[in-house]
Image (cartoon, rainbow, N blue to C red; front, top):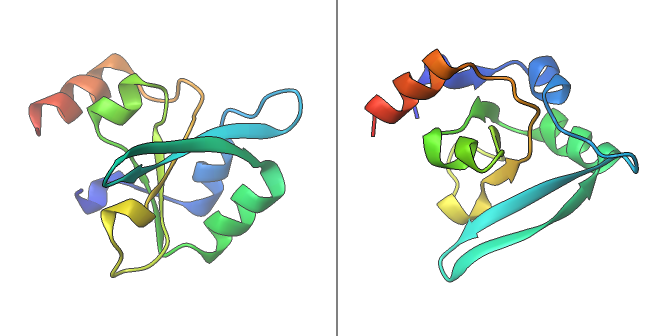
Length: 102
């Protein structure tokens, strides 16, 4: 993923789609499939604060409503990336650009 998709940690926190219980859906892309669950606001904000980077996701994850990926360290496995459910924060033009980069 290109650096132009890096988000500030503040912006990452703004676009998370929390429910009425301050929970947001997340998933890891494990070798055997997706492993999903809900994260509370406090733990997600801690993950963001401790992250190497926060980035916009690609078109596929974005299409299923998970527009944020938390990258825990510079050298990490794909299965360590945490995908987070987001509010509709990307417009159609951005979606089309992401799809063209596949």
